[in-house]
Structure formats: structure tokens, C-alpha cells
Length: 348
Image (cartoon, rainbow, N blue to C red; front, side):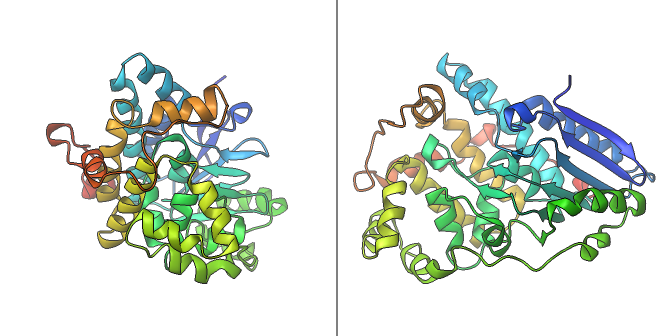
């Protein structure tokens, strides 16, 4: 059975992830199929909008196939992981620049690669079960798939907080952070789907949308703004220690790779200063290109996913990490820089 269902239905192109037993984790083949479908429908007059959803109640997409990247990197095959990221990032850019409306209905876990699928669509719908996160720093990676751009554009310093803490957003937080646009109760999704397929008009979402739930992070916005505006990790940690809630956040952050945290902080701020999906993906790729060969991804995935001992041994602490290591991970790749389709080509 295929991991993805791609078909035309009514006025819509339909893309459904059909790997619920694996929480619809995204494989290289699935990413390539999404891009191919979007390319095929670009000039198809029968397709007025694209609707993406997923089978199963637990997850829209709980990330990319990190175990595959781990296995290949462990043997010294870094090219396979780099190809995975290249194909995935090409898909992210294609969704972001697609000339026709892309509508996403995302339930359950929307993590990492799932954010790359949903977050760049034009119309993003969540429900009461949706939980969203960028959980890369705890496994030695960085918020990628264009996640640094979404985080950089979040209000205030919410992006830095979400990227470094890997906190799971509830529906109210995900709407406040700008990762989603509409809250529609999941019981109404079948009727919404039928309306979208029948009309080809994303304006149908408005008839089903309900008021956004209150963000659970609302009481902590002032602490987030103060701590995560810090110029570096050491200052940030000192500010978090000043409050009870911040102290708990710092405990979680200290479980992540300091190298990933420092690089994530720089990438989020770079995306805020220079918005644009292509620029964000190119910067992220400089890290992920090196993640297996000189980063801490292998150790992070081992501890979290393979051995599950939750006891990664990082090379540095928040205080000992040198700026040169961060610069080396994010330095331009020369001839190996990520090549993306030109924006005009993606827009038709």
C-alpha cells in the first residue's frame, strides 16, 4: 500500500498522507510525490485548489524520516541524508510559492516535517486535537523545512522560544504564532472537505471557522519577550533562571544540543531580518548538510529515538560553546549550496 494518496476529486487536487501507523512521518518518496503532483496540477484547469490532509486521528505528520537519515549517516553515507533534505526543501518551496490555493487540514501531531507540509500553505486549518512543534534541537538538528522563517515571523520573541524550547503549541498558541490561520472543529471537517472539493473555493472555510481558543502561553508572554530577546544563550539562560516558569523552560533547553540551540537562534533571527522561503531554506541546509558529518545529529537521534535513554552526551554546554563552531556550521557551502527552483518558475 502506498504511503500517500494523490488524486483529483471535483475541483480539487487531493493529497492524503496514508501512513497513520508511522504517524504519517514523511519519507523522501512521499516528498517527491507531493512535488510531482503540484507540478502536474499547476497548469491543469480542472484543479482549482489543492487540499492536503492525512489519515488517522493521532497525527497529520509527526516529522520526517529521521531514522533513515540516522542509519545512513552512521555508516558514513552523508549523501543520502543530504538528498533527503534537498528533496524535502524543494517541496517546501514549491508549496510556499504555489500559484493556486493550497488548503491543509491538520489534526493531531504536526511536528518538524509536518510543519514544512502545512506551514507554507495559503490556508491552514487546525482542530481541537492539533499540537504543533519544532522539536529538532533536542536531537541535534535545527528548526528547518522553512521553520526558521515561520518562527522568525511569529509575534515578538515567540519564535525564539518555540524554536529553542521545542514546546508543543496547542491550537490557540499555533494560531497566535502564525503557524495556522483557522480553527474548525474536527467534526465539521467532512462537510468542509465536501464544500472545498465541490466549489474549488477556499472561501468556504469561513463558514466553518470558529473563534480561536486562548493561547495557553498568554500568561508567559512577558517572560518570553524578556528572556528570548537576549543576545546569546548564556544571557538568555540567566534571564530564564529569574522566574519559576523560566527555570523549568531552561531545564528543558539544557537537554538540547548547545550547538543546535545557538544555530537555531541565529537562523530564526536571520529569517526575521531577511524574510523569504528560499533564503531560509538555503541557510537551514548549510546546517543539515553538515549535521551528520560534523554536527551532533547522530548522538541526538541515538538518545531520543534509537536507544531511547534520553541521555545524549553533547560536546559542549551552554557556556562553553565557541562562536566559531556556530559560524562553521552555518557557513556557505560554495558549490554545494542548496539549489531551489526560481520563484517565477514555482509561481507558474
